[in-house]
Image 1 (cartoon, rainbow, N blue to C red):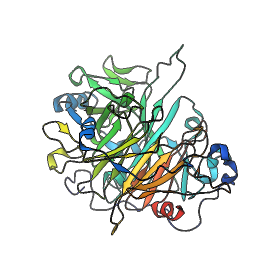
Image 2: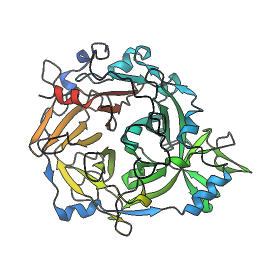
Image 3: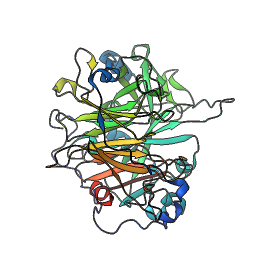
Image 4: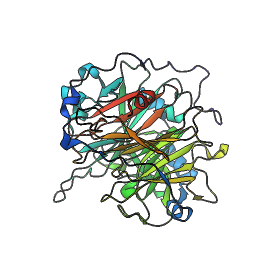
Length: 448
């Protein structure tokens, strides 16, 4: 990090050894799995339309930061901060490489373009039906050299969704992060971290029950979508803490701390609330719920990209960005004016049900391109990935019926690793949960 080098080392981490050009992963005839009934986005979403200035006021945020005293109290009571490196030294789960993924898991991967790297979670996490992975960010977002200390790291956000209204599970709504050590691309390992919120002046904490549809790691901060899309939550990756009591409780237990069986917790340091009040899904002129997040390093300053959460098929879907602060004392936080954050830019698209979006301006390009993921019509088949700008939209076709359903099954957010040129995403469909990457250039090369 150029502004603050607390977590940096002069010695760079080992570069990811992924082959960005070469033989694509051997996938099991995935194209044959797509039928006309699964096709999505057969009608182009068209070009992006700039949102009128007056409408952008619905996108304003208000910043609320927890006192440093409360955070320091919690850290002190729990034995001090362990940081990302401390968690990864204790990684206890191994990801399976492509060859060890099942045929069903490999079938969840994109058809066109094909992934150059793919990983599946360990057996227990792959089979769980309650926990749902929806978001991904990397140390390629955190710093422009792609490393955090000496490691390359991936974070994946999962939310517990039991779905049994008559008998809700005690874990319903819990949010956890898989902290993945990707330094050796042939041997990824990870550890779970529970998201919590400090309480009682930092003497205790409570579980955060929030959907993780979007997540961005920028400098030393992690920003995620808040429950029901009402705003954003902020975490400091230096403040990872270790629980010393192994029980189902969450918070202070006697003279120690428990985290529902998890060894590590990450306490929120603040939030960004929508100034217009609670959001409403699927209404064009209402305060929008925030769906997915991504980082754009090609703007000046760097910016946080947000999308409107899917609703009942609104006529148009909003896409916008917030600028990050350039002040050294506000590392990783959004630019504000006395606690208020304005959208730096906003657009609308005719595409509905957006699961993830990324904006990027290639070197020498005249305008920014937006990569927008949309689900299948039945939400059970392969999705589509459109590249949009003010001039129009393009997507790959991958079957004889000219279907655009070429992207992954049940895909979540998008993340661009600038140093390697890779686009990362993940799938969440029953027992088909895969983390995968491909060169962004191959996405451009696949477009009609």
